[in-house]
Length: 124
Image 1 (tube, rainbow, N blue to C red):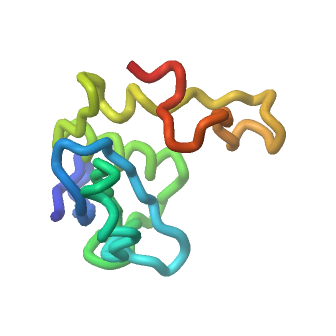
Image 2 (cartoon, one colour):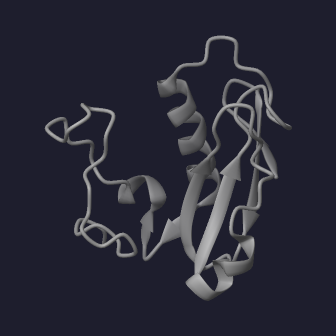
């Protein structure tokens, strides 16, 4: 799938699993495309919807000469809003746990949760 972002660039992504499953946003690493069907055979049983993006300049996504981590977040938020990616009545962006600067590793680390398969306590 692709969509035009507000600045005119095209962003591509792929989806696997049930459309009503819990959305999992997979932002690939260096030199990887979103076409990697990571664990696709297990998604239905786990009730997960894997959404994997082609980063700017890779796969079917257009280049972003001035990209930053903040611009990448904005790109993803545009897709979330346009595609109405919801889970249990909240948009995915509302479900992302807040960054806790006191967690070891600095502000880039997210809060850890005791049960890896369960949603964080602040999810509704």
